[in-house]
Image 1 (cartoon, rainbow, N blue to C red):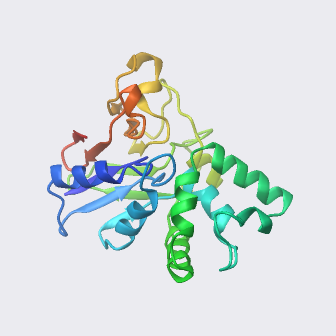
Image 2 (spheres, rainbow, N blue to C red):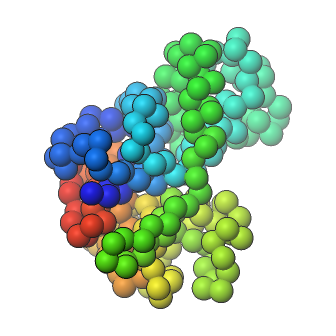
Length: 237
């Protein structure tokens, strides 16, 4: 079976519960459409778990992108407490944006790792893809990105889009995408769409599926969603 999740945001317990619920095995495949990290309580344990699974295929989200900008070039001597000493003014701006968007839990847990483990994790995240495409046995086609596609042009090949267009897009309810394949993405919690009236449910349209149901926003009714591409079944935790 082929499953898709997105925007887990450090909710490692929910992730583990979901794997149990879908009876995930080594024979299955799981695509995670970015934003593993930040805001939640266990972002680094979640990343390390996925790094050790050969059947988990990660895409990069805006949160991983800014994490890399903040930690990729730091020396082994850097710690959570002295990290700002190593930044240029521009680097400090990125760091402040990261912290303002829930990055503290990720940053603290990252610097609790050994320098070697940090480098392994940076190498892992650096390999996250911007998009993935799948053709199912029945001929259905899917294209997956973190956030949808900003300024979508049906004549423009996906590889020609700027990375920002695939990790920071905010599709609206009436947007349309490809006619020959379905776009699957997260990034914008479905419960924030006006027509959803606060419901945290996967949104299906004839050209896209939004699977971000706000896993980390429990107080607002958010929950983790998992889409099974084989039959379009949806699971929630």
